[in-house]
Amino acid sequence: MQLQQLRYFAAVADTRHFTRAAERLHVAQPSLSQQIKALERELGADLFHRARGHIALTDAGEALLPLARQILADTETARREVQEVAQLRRGRVRLGAPPSLCASLVPDVLRRFHDAFPGIELIIDEGGSQDLVRTLAAGELDLALIITPLPGQAPALAATELLREELVVASSPAAPPPTKARRIRVEDLRDRPMVMFRRGYDLREFTTAACRAAGFEPSFTVEGGEMDAVLGFVRAGLGIAVLPGMVAARSGLRITPFAGHAMRRTIAVAHRKDVAPPRAARELRRVLLAYLRSADADDLGTRLLP
Image 1 (cartoon, rainbow, N blue to C red):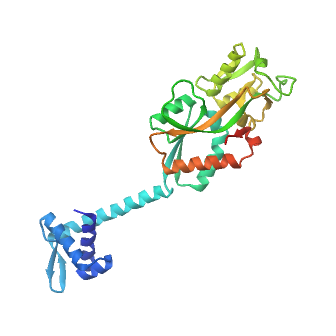
Image 2 (spheres, rainbow, N blue to C red):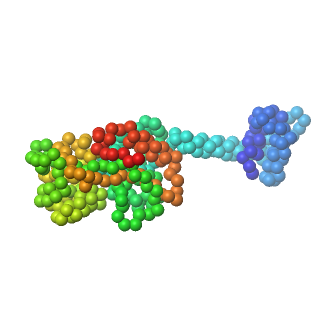
Image 3 (cartoon, helix red, strand yellow):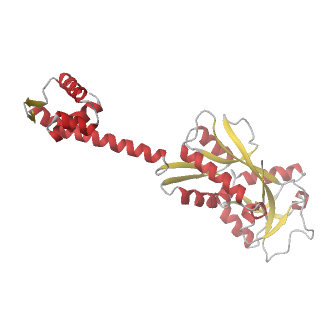
């Protein structure tokens, strides 16, 4: 049984005339008649009483007609649903990003994307880069913003480096500045009370590794917080924190840049190599790149990579 045969059958049932049904469907009348006869042979029953000048449904035709109309309606619904997804009127995008980017870059990008494609559902997975890479490799994300390079062996991902972001020291405006100089060195963090993120944050690993490379272990007054908690602890004067420039610029805290470029990180957008991202995800990636190109690098505290 073919959809075309059901469509021909429904047209003859509506018009009660083979020629008018063929004209409605823009097909040759002999072809329409042949397809209906083929349908009758397959079903093993006549669907129409054929009398000169009069066409009527048989009992079998009466039984088939509502089913045929439902099948044709469902087929049209399926066609529209697929077209809506293809034309970005509906669908979803699953994006992973570290908490620091969810607090800075991601909201502005998602606002632009939502304005352009309001019917697309946005699903955000917030986590460390290593966790996001595993989730991406498992097929549970379409795209992920990650911090590179990743330690260890990463799955087969296609990653495009987007920008380089300076890390800064944030302190409470009510507390003394962490240094009298305009810029601070990593060595100056020795014995400084620091507020530190929970384990699993890329920033925690990055800061700890930089301090150890400088020959000391960082001293924590408070540790284990999420991004909002760390900002609050710093604001309360409990210690200083190493933050991404994009987050610090919006925090209202005192910002002290590092000397040189010892404390910076590279942000990339990644997807699986073996599976092309869906169209909605490709559009989100395009919106992200357009936003980065149009934004003021000084405002972002970043440098866009070519």
